[in-house]
Length: 478
Ligand SMILES: Cc1cc2nc3c(=O)[nH]c(=O)nc-3n(C[C@H](O)[C@H](O)[C@H](O)COP(=O)(O)OP(=O)(O)OC[C@H]3O[C@@H](n4cnc5c(N)ncnc54)[C@H](O)[C@@H]3O)c2cc1C
Image (cartoon, rainbow, N blue to C red):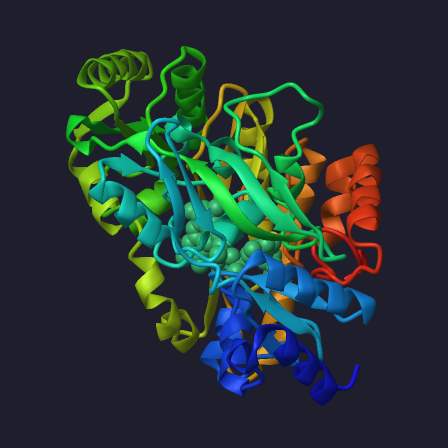
């Protein structure tokens, strides 16, 4: 569709001030924090397709009218809220539309009896957490991107927070939601503590990454806020596989601290101020809730870790981690790694306990052989379950500052090794960042025979394929 006509029609639906074709607004909304795009931005060359405009509807009715119009005219649309995606999730299509949720912003209802809060999809998580804290509550959801992410994006990516072992991921925290499909239909999934009335429809939109509909509202659980009763302690354990065994033991014996982290010896030295002796991993543990509960969790965990000859490092490393855990958000746009000529990032996967240690070792062993300019490869586990855990690989490689167009190749070579080793050894290729556009080629392998159900859902809810092309589905040959 002709760009001028497209913009004029959208302005008719939402008003002149809710459509922008300004270059800087479009670029800001297309912004993504995946490592290689960060490098490109550092070089001042951002190789991102240019959308025709950004449209910011003020309510679900307007979202419906916008989508109905785009659908009839087969115009590509990419939803966005906080743009803190690290997977090319908000990268637009050339000439397409960015559907921005920022005007769907604010608390709609705080229900202190049923312990939930209903908010617009464009509500910043940091604002919501502050609003709840003032009233004695918390969301219990603390992703590192808390200062950046908004509610719609959190649901759409199946986000997880640093205190997830106690509170769960966003899929556990969502009581109900409202979304709009490509044909403009507004769908409300009502709030309920639990029900048995067919498959859980919330989960169609949670994790759909803007491919099946636009989330306009969510109702999230709230919890009493009482950090003063926290128990916290750090321990050192020799070797990553041994550390993973210790984590497993904590989980299978039934302890539920809020934070359970295990950093390998490389990260312990590099990121956690050498808090443990050389060659040791560091365990960061924190429990919160009523005092009697946190004290007994602390006591039990201490006894488990004594069986692993763990060294007690006290609570200082945990306090340090707590204080600095989100610092990275404020420095992302300084491009300090680009100035050093390095592309750096993280990549998270998950696996059952029986497989996770082998995946970690295989990636660390293979990476230096296949990535010539590799500077570092390390990892930590930050979210544990009774059945397994995740590994967040952290990596850095040198790239040519004068040839930013080549950095994507270096980056994707690193991702390829992680994806291949994870799939070959029975893991899952994304624990919480989602597929975005960069992991799509591995989705058929990840899902196996169940991928067809995903395709059928896509065809049913978005028959013209206007929503976020290339994410989860699509060009699997990239
Ligand atoms: C420094 C840093 C740290 C991070 N730490 C974490 C972490 O600890 N845990 C974690 O889970 N993630 C983390 N992330 C990733 C990111 O913050 C999450 O994926 C977050 O959920 C994205 O929210 P957002 O509002 O920024 O969404 P966006 O970036 O705007 O969008 C993300 C995806 O959701 C889709 N989407 C957005 N809004 C809607 C909507 N209303 N309806 C339908 N689809 C929509 C988009 O199309 C896109 O595919 C981190 C990112 C950064 C940069």
